[in-house]
Image (cartoon, rainbow, N blue to C red):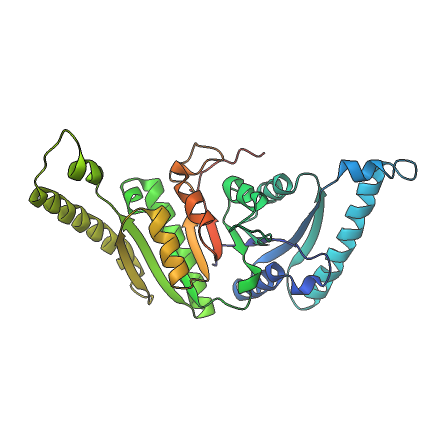
Length: 311
């Protein structure tokens, strides 16, 4: 976690700001690692509402008044926390929520964005998905119903990416963050990865192939052995940490949610794309499928040199 020098905290709570879970976690983390914090919020103009005030105040003037009022609230909290020794400031922008958040992280060189997840009937709402897709820096979305719990952390790594330098770096960044988080919260850590044999179903049930079962079993054993060897090389770099190591057969979009939900994982640390140069897309939608199926807080991250489609 010491890699984070500048933490951006998106404040969701309209009142009682000190109890916003993102503020609580951001302040706690900043104190631990000596990072500076920027409290940030966005005023999103509603044109239909603004137009009803046209005879009293112009839409732009009203937006400016709302921004100023919100900034006063954040500055008051920042001043209080500053007196307690934190390097902290406050900013407020106006515009489209997720766009302004991502732009602020980029322009102000934030290293980590912390935000309370918006309430949603599904795992995360569309605004939070946009942020996870488009923010180039790690995003920590906290489920408020788990705000007092941080006892189980899962690092989900993709061993198929170990053959590329970029993939190796991302897997290690995932584990770096997960181990740091588990250490500072004294939480249980699991490092999980999945494996599968490409074309197994076709080999078993293909209409035009007759592959003996013994050969398929040999292929499966060889594939599992190779993944296990790769996994061992990766986790051996973290021998000083205590963790559970899980290599499971199956597709990540089913294995990870099943593990997370059945083991009551509090925070999942995972990548959202496998290769850079694909702005705003999750590779094969696997990551998005996982995120849609879990009910936990998440820390999502991109490869180091990934470029956001938002500028």
